[in-house]
Image 1 (tube, rainbow, N blue to C red):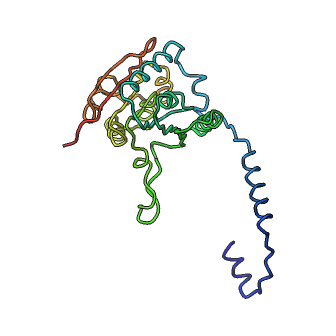
Image 2 (cartoon, one colour):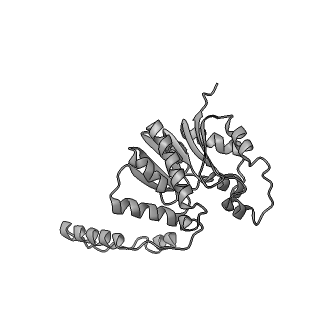
Image 3 (tube, rainbow, N blue to C red):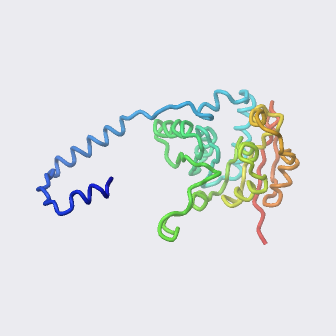
Length: 254
């Protein structure tokens, strides 16, 4: 259509352009800014937008998970934290409260919007909510793929949080545990990761409509796969649940 209109108007004399003075242009821009800022974000029903309303964590388990992650962060004192699968940013904020710059990532747009609105209302600094699909992250872009770095390059951090995410990557997206370990190792030297076993209701939900072909998705299989890239520094069970929290340090590569 654009090309057709260009052909249609070839050779047609241009009419004098109407111009806005500086005051009129400033008023137009101000009106556009106020209009855009006043637009409410849509709130569609998404799979994980209300995750914490339907999670199988009771208060004791959730509080214990927060305690474990907090103690790990106190020990590590990271300057920059990457939170993968952050949902509405509950654990990202725990890292921020301890002084870290946090990249808070999730695939669910409603969860990310909730995270952003909380950040905006509290006027939080050093906190960046990002909409990211880890199975298809932003690539390097621009001339020769060198103008803008990929998500993996931009997101490198001192500590990577991978909480209540491993089952989505390994089971929902069929990613071998070893590949997940490799990717986590590419993002930072220290990993705080939560293993969610098959006995957990969230994993049962994923397996309800498909064949269980994940024979190595066990605590032992998980530890074996991640042992190729990481040393386990700590392994702590989450109270009143069957989930396990791990603190891992990336191995030096030969």
